[in-house]
Length: 463
Ligand code: ADP
Image (cartoon, rainbow, N blue to C red; front, side):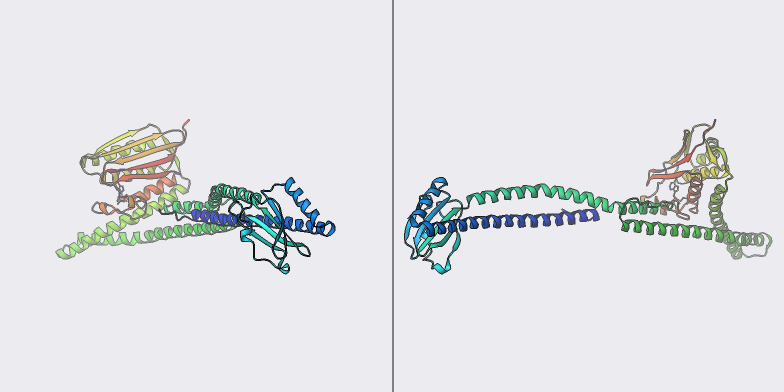
């Protein structure tokens, strides 16, 4: 199984791992601390017992110690505690009931000198499920008291803690993963926004900017840098466009002169040989092609400037559509393409009549040009108070998916359309006009099946 490699997933994983490590270490520390505290308490109890019996032995003698042991055993539980009195050479002189402490003496140490006492030890007896903590210590000049206490209660307590810690761990693990997921998503939200904007910009929306609200300083810095970079790119694109427009403008007159001169020579000089005539003809042809491209570049610049200068009027876009359909009817018929137009009447947009006319012309020209014989081209126009939707669709050659976001670029032509006439400027012009009118254009296409261009323009209400 391949784990996702996203930053948010890795952040979540790090957070969860760190949390789990911290939790496990804390629980292990708590468990062992608790264990040693309980052991310490048991040892303290044993030491206290030794002290009490030592005092009793000193003040009241051996008999009194034996009576006290019997009393303690009676009031307590013979299964949990035992007492033995031994001489220094290991002879047992008194013992409480040892019936539930079988084999106790089998692991009695070969006897212990008074200098090594007190001796504390934990032993396991076959007759007992739990361990036993024992102490040997002198309570008088020649008497050793041997006490043993079952640690069953402590072990039960530790088992409860163990279950509690495991439950805590099992509950905390998904909770930590969830919190880690929330935190990582919050942390990378800003980055996601920036990458979304970057993706939009790739699609040509240079006006978008990242708006950072409550993200950390680093994200804000990144967003500011990103926005500054976009401002710069936009300026460069505009500069580049202006430069192209200026070059086109400067080239148009000399190129027109070259064309006129060539035409003049071709028509007036009858002495020219066939080779020279062919060379001049191809000069005129190439000049025409270049002039067409230059004019298209300047048209796009004009469309932008013309729309920006505020010389717009209400335009009956329905009538323009009807006129365009009538105009292209002959061309469609000539190509045996069926042209169908379904137009809502009296849809009005605020704009430039001339540019909108040419927008239709470019779209219809393309649709008929790129649709083979017996195909269909459908034009529809619908409107409401807010928007006008124009759709031009055809059953033509279609556009490859990889070219869809390039067809609005200047001079771009798809490979499969190169055999047909054109210079790759028509759709750039259409886009400039549509956007200049505050609208947008969208294309859907399937290679070999056809294309559909949808334009959305803001309508104006007619009272
Ligand atoms: P051109 O002069 O090449 O038609 P355009 O800017 O009008 O230039 O179109 C750019 C490219 O988009 C065309 O070369 C063609 O590859 C593709 N295209 C445009 N309209 C259509 C269409 N209706 N069907 C298929 N391809 C189209």
